[in-house]
Image (cartoon, rainbow over all chains, first blue to last red; front, side, top):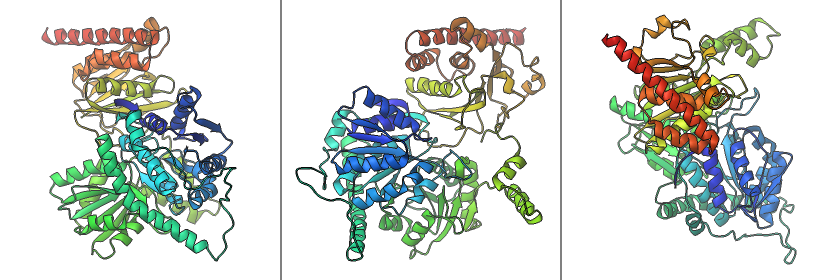
Length: 417
Length: 196
């Protein structure tokens, strides 16, 4: 049913249709609206026999999710930013144990300095934890990916993280076509655990494994992620057949057939990028876009194929590895290492900095002229940076940089972007 | 695409106003996107929300930098916040106040725009009269409908009642309809004044 609805609400209602049995989460912006909405639904009895378990921290939220999942329950949680970092040991455990928990990550920057706004630092921090990570471009896709995520997770017995941009998607009110219960029930069969803690048939889960078997266990996890590369497109096709609209998949190409330049990105910025790309097309540049929906497992072959005809690739990232450069760029470089394209990175949107189509258009125009630097920080205020650098060179006790910069900027509450 | 930026203060329903406008556009079968400025909102702090309306799906997720219309719920912001940033000479501006642009010290500024697209509307007074509370957000949407013609008062009514079911919705709608009439009369007076 078509609704004009907040992204968080659309996700909450979709998760509810997936018949979760245990929901356990600790509130943190910008995830809060999702969990509040599910909490209300559980309290009303609408999701019976689902239990909402209140906990004292994110570490407990993921630990309880692990326990619930190991006991055979369909388990769901959601977090963001520092919340994800606080649960990180359990995040690794969920993957290592092969428990099909589904978690929404409402992407948010990581402090310090404390910042509640969107970027992808949190998702990148757990890139290697063994979770499947799917990125939503729109609120429609954010909602749909949760249905797909439960089925994928349970088929493979692997946890799945659905990443949606905090505030930009979670707090945006847009048109979303929400499925009905019968459609979701037809697509998502009841959870049949591969392993379960049961008093009548006791097993151990999570035993100590020494050097004699650890590498094999890890390699098996890798193989299951590779299986996901097969299952994700198949489940996306099944989704389209069942729900009548495409959602999910490994990658999502746009105008790449004849493109000299392909822009690669994750998440909601793809929409703004597509507008900028259309403008550059009108100006005569042959530009296309490759959205990465499945970031883990990384679809090497699909990315390589999509970029095989491009002369130049520009990766637009909302995170970076400090002291090195792009994170997604590294993966894209590995996938396209033998295609002969030039690869450049644009880092943007950190801590909620607005990514404007105007700035993107300028950067793409520069890329078409081979004038884009290999690593560009979009809309960086170089003057502010220089001022702080000078302060640090001339004064030993120059003080905390973040606060110095805020003082230099003056009041920011008055600004629109 | 028609882009709206709404300025106000925490507690005035700035975010709800953009949501309601988007729901009204949806009720008319159009595509719409509403979102807040994502600050850590506090009562009384400056808050911005945005709404885009289009006949095609809206892909961009950037803030509205060049609004086609500006709704200012709190007149005390005019000298504190860059309210008018990115505004073109064709833009609509609706300010919640019982004073005129000249009285606000914006007379010179207002002359840069189409005269019939800049209006003030005493939304707080209308809200007090109809709701008994100084909440100007839904009221101003009635004025917005009359000023811009981008949305019907009926659609605003549908959205307001969906967002605020029951008596609260009815009272908000009565206030919005009063603002619609106020703005329509102002516009008519302007037409008469220009033909005289």
